[in-house]
Image (cartoon, rainbow, N blue to C red; front, top):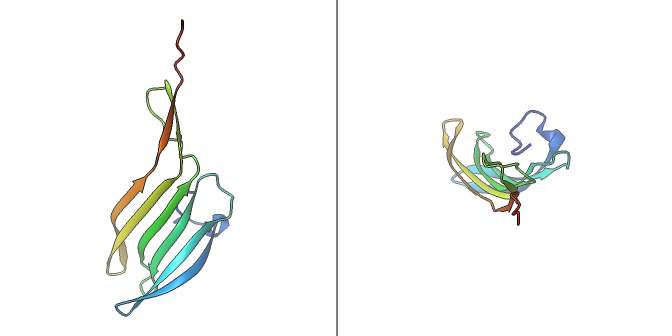
Length: 117
């Protein structure tokens, strides 16, 4: 359950309107997305939604848990920490079109190869 744009999202997340922002006559809702703890990988952060059009303008938060990144070279084990993510959208009519994604994470690699003396 990475980002709660899924059916049955309320099973995995609770949503709280934290702020109402006025922008050029539009009301933007800042919604806090909180995990219910039912998934090992989950999103925690904020959605910014235009109340009039119901369009998502921005998603800003952290993907928590192990994403399970792997490589073809099986001599290394990879453990990654949380991944910060920022997604912004352009509103075209009643559609939210992805403008860009910025994601950052850190990883720790462990060599599985043993040195034989």
